[in-house]
Length: 340
Image (cartoon, rainbow, N blue to C red; front, side, top):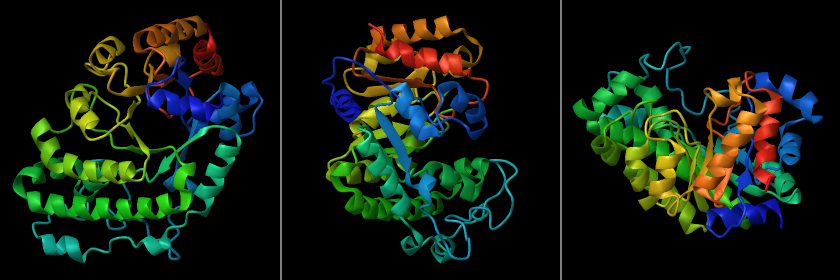
């Protein structure tokens, strides 16, 4: 059985063994990881550790190629970023016409050649392809206003917030439509991300979530489903209160299970949702992977496997493994997946 078959069995709730994904190690981590595992790049690292899929995000594969180096979304009007709360170009906007006049990106500057090459390499190696634009419309909208402004404008200027979100999602849909035409059935699932939670709760109320996020979120999931793809969502934080909404919107798998966030413990999630959604992640990156022993990591993976069963993909609780995660602990996490 190929790793691609394993992934598709898991996400269809038909597997008798769980899978593994090592995440996307931070660039500062590779100096220790690559020599330890005797590999030259992340592709080889994934093969060595037994990944069942590769993440081929379009934006990581030279998607945006504007000849004048104009960013895809100039959210700060050319200014340098110094905080999530700093004013974006629509910080004071009260008129939808101003949103319409903005220089929104043109898909003609998108290039898919590198992503297609990466997908071909993954397919040749027998792993599933998870791809698509990252579609971080929640984050980009936040940048266009500044975080505090964004949340306030949901109340004071809802039409402006909706206009910005509409333009963002429209662009991501056009990007994905083009990519889906190119990649066809060589892709197994769309993998996209928006962090909807903090360590303690949602960043916006469920009511605001339903008004300003879910209608646009459904456009992305509906598009992918219409092309026959499974849907994998990345969202950090304490998002338990909206997981039923995500399931209803067609999400097949949820990543990364921020283990230390409120109500995101494996016991609770497995009890409530494991028959309705596949979980990817759960191996704590806040305490366990940086500071635990290999045996503790190994034992935790065994616990997660018992809780979630075989339709589960073991992975770190955040994809960007930092340098404080030792190669030994990464190896213990991978080794535990294939143990009896």
